[in-house]
Length: 90
Image (cartoon, one colour):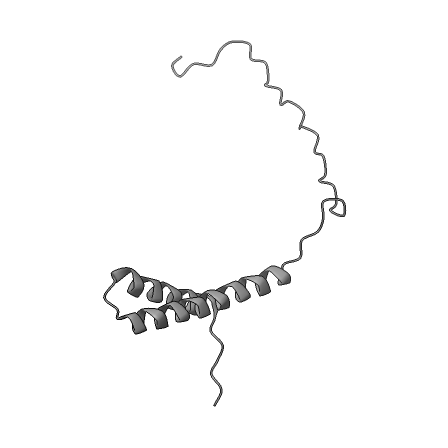
C-alpha cells in the first residue's frame, strides 16, 4: 500500500524534530548524518508544497488590475442651529 505524501505541516514538524535532535548534540555520527539527510528531505517537501501553493495563487499584474473606484468624500453634515445652548439643567 502506497504511503500518503506528507503535507506541508507534517513535513515542517518532522524537519523541526530533526533539527532539534541535531541541536541537542546527543547523536552518534551516523545518527547525526541520518538526521541531516532527513532534514534535507523534509525541507525539500516543504519547499515543494510552498511552490505548489504559490502556483495556485493567481496574481494579476498591476497593469491588468481594475482601478480602485475613487470615492468622493461625503458632504459635511450640517448641525441644526439652536436658538440657545442646550443644558442639562433648566
